Amino acid sequence: AQTVTQSQPEMSVQEAETVTLSCTYDTSESNYYLFWYKQPPSRQMILVIRQEAYKQQNATENRFSVNFQKAAKSFSLKISDSQLGDTAMYFCAFMKHRNAGNMLTFGGGTRLMVKP
Amino acid sequence: SAVISQKPSRDICQRGTSLTIQCQVDSQVTMMFWYRQQPGQSLTLIATANQGSEATYESGFVIDKFPISRPNLTFSTLTVSNMSPEDSSIYLCSVKGARDEKLFFGSGTQLSVL
Image (cartoon, each protein chain N blue to C red):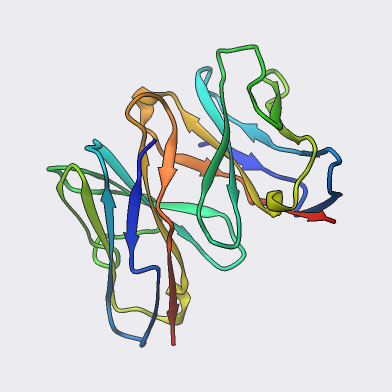
């Protein structure tokens, strides 16, 4: 079974600064996908970024980027130029390769507060 | 991306009653997933619903408590049966995008059981 661990229950950052959220996972799979989801108070789960394990290049989406360390089983999220709208719960998630199903295993979440 | 409509958005229910949550997708999808998010917690998969077959339940979840229907490729329902206060949670449906391995979520149903 896979496990996903987010060791930072809460974090805060000043507006316009950079923050990094940590995520580690444990799996025996060699091919898989990793995700970061954002959940604002509206409850909507919003996909922030996705990483395919077989790709060495770190994924980026505008102000969001990841540091994927496969050997260390680490998948951190960096948010640059933080905005007030980034305030939300952030969940790291793991998914096996498509042929093994598409269900997600989530970490416990990190509550991020962006301060003006 | 897939557009998912989930209803109701919230409800307050009495102990012992049942609530059916609906999930409508704007495109045909093979698999739909139902998750539960207990207060202050992360998301836990309840079951996977494939069209034309019985849903597959995760450990700790049973069909009698959480019956699921999947009548076609764009719609599914999850029923929370014989509710107790411990069932107070957010319930979310999710589908995989058509092109790649991305999962999209409905807006969730906030359930409170008195």
